Image (tube, rainbow, N blue to C red):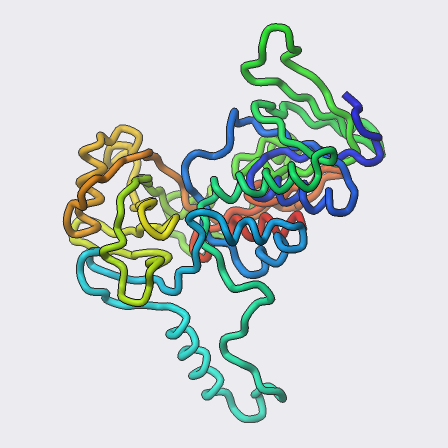
Length: 368
């Protein structure tokens, strides 16, 4: 389906933040692309939520910053809070003020000969206004909308299109074989696209990385030999519960958006509750051990409610359980990010523990 000249065609696999950012960056430089996404629709459940200042600068350069910053549920939480339970007084708080004090103390401790020759402010602002908190599904929706509005003829997303094989059969082109998921009978279920380059943004379980034979390397056995599966780079298994409930009554005074995270430590377990919209959208994460307890997919609604109540310290009213599941905390990096005309980006080439929100942000920075 050569709808654009061969020498200007890029196939992007995956319509997550990395794939959409790749299409936006290419379109700004006049390069056409098509995004192929195996899912039938955008993400439904929140996953990533932190957008760093550097990533926001990239989004500003492609015309997406204002829409992201004004999005419903977007905010700038100023603290992370440690608690026994959410309803109880904080054990510790780390935020902008505390960070400034730590940096000031570090500057003061520097020997005079090692101090910067110019005055350095401990809290240096980005050209954009710091970090943004925004649930990934909403961020993806906005990036796709900006792409459609700014570059209607330059790039588009095809949902329900699974890339089966990527073949490099020449020095200047790549052949991508695609199957159309759930296609109508009159449409071909399989087709091919010939392009100049492929950018694989197809996630941690990247089919393209596997088909190219690119291995993942991990240092987990050296840094944490007691990990659940160090050779596979699996540090820990976690359960997640996505729920809707207004928890704003537990916000500390002067923080109307609430904390970025509540880290809780109860007698029955520990974990964290992630803030996705500053009011009533949350995901609770706790470790679990396969083979020793029921898989989270088998938890009942009452099981989920009991775990949330334990973390909060009481059962808040009107809790709506929206989803549950499991994920693996991993640490691994692909041995190479490129094979010929195929590039890997985002989780397809590096997996991080979630602390710091590096996954989404490094993926966007990869493609930029």
